[in-house]
Image (cartoon, rainbow, N blue to C red; front, side):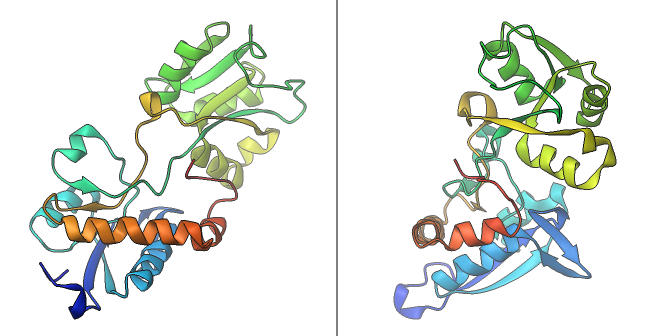
Length: 243
């Protein structure tokens, strides 16, 4: 973005970087970036009356490239963390991904409250946010850690655990793409608790680029208010992602 450009000089020119390696958030169609964040980025730029270009950057160099002013913003499923905040500033989150329970399709489970799941075996990915959350909140259940989500779902299919708790987008993707998950379906969400699951995913900008940050925040609010955000989200996720 042109540093210090007054409103009278709009449209702005904004360069946005993404990784192109995390569908459905961002991915490559040939050599072009595509996905939820890319479509959302175009809508934000249109709302800001800005001309935007999108560039592909590998994950390890996303933040260094931003700081070195090779581009002006990052939209790459980047989690808002204290460690990241020390280097960049973030917009209000546009994703607050819920966690969800998966169970066998013939399950008799009718609720996912701690009392409803008393005595149940819940599979989680070891040392994940869901692992910590389950151990604290579902103390009446047996929490079974796994090295990865696939191993947990395979044991769910075999009946070795009663449920699996994981990020909803990961479970939904597994259900769509892996035949091992045909046994099972999602049975309930877990509210997004920042104490365990963080502050969501946001647009990263340089820490001193307060004007651009304000523009992104205002445009995000506008897209939510008029339904544009929901229409874009629905093309990539069939569930709410920002609550």
